[in-house]
Image (cartoon, rainbow, N blue to C red):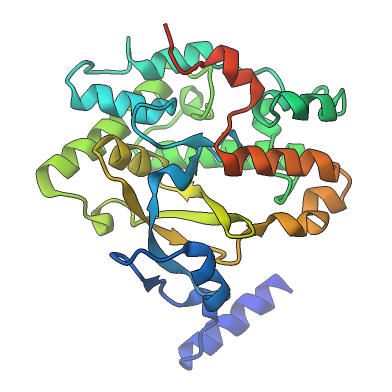
Length: 296
C-alpha cells in the first residue's frame, strides 16, 4: 500500500499536481506575524516565519529555552567559543553538561516534580533513550532503534563512523569523540557565519520546527537545526527564521486524541504535564539538580 501511494504521488507530481504539504514553504520573514494565526489560515501549508528565541524549545522533550545567558548547553558553549574561552570539547561547558547530566530513566527527561507523582512506577525499566512525546509514537524499542539510526546517520554525514559516535547528544554520557563532534559542529557554524554571514542554503537549510499551542499561546519545538538555532541565539539573534512543519502542530485541547494517550501508554494527565512544561519553558525535575541555572 505504501509503495502504491508513493507511485501515485510521483505520477501526480509529474503531471503538475502537488499536495499542499509538498509545496515550498511560504516566506513571511521580516513580518511580525503570529505563527498560530498563520497556521489557522494556511492549514497544512508549511511556512517560514521569524520566531522569538524565547518561544523556541530545544532538545526535544527536554525543552531548553534558547535565550542567551540561559541553561541550554549548546548556547552556553557557543558563547564560550565566541569569547575565545575554549578551543575544544575538553574543559568546555558542553563537557561539563555531559558529565553532570546522565539521566537514568524515562521519567528523568520527561516530568517535572508534579509529573513524577503522576508517573509513579509506571515507566520503571525504560531508559531516557526510549522516551518520546505523548503525541508521537511511543513504542520504546522502536524509539531506541530510531535514535540509534539517527545518531549513525548524523555521524556519517560528518565523515565519522564507529560505535564511539552512537551516543545521543541531548544528554550524557557521551564518548570523547562524540563530544568533540558536537563541539566542532557548533564551532564550524560560528566560523562560517563570521566569514560569510548566515546563509541557510549553505547550512542544511533553515531551522525547522512545529507548534505547540494552548489557545493563542505557543512554543516551537525544534525538529531540525539544533546547532544552528543555538549558535544564532549566542550571536545575539532575537528572532530566528524557522520553517513551521506540520503547520497545524499539536494543540493542548486535542490531548485525548494523541497517540500515546489513546494507546494508554500515557494518561491524559501525564501527557498534559509534559505539554505544559515544554510550552512554558520549564525543564524536567531531574535537571533542577543536575544542571541548575548556575553551574559550578
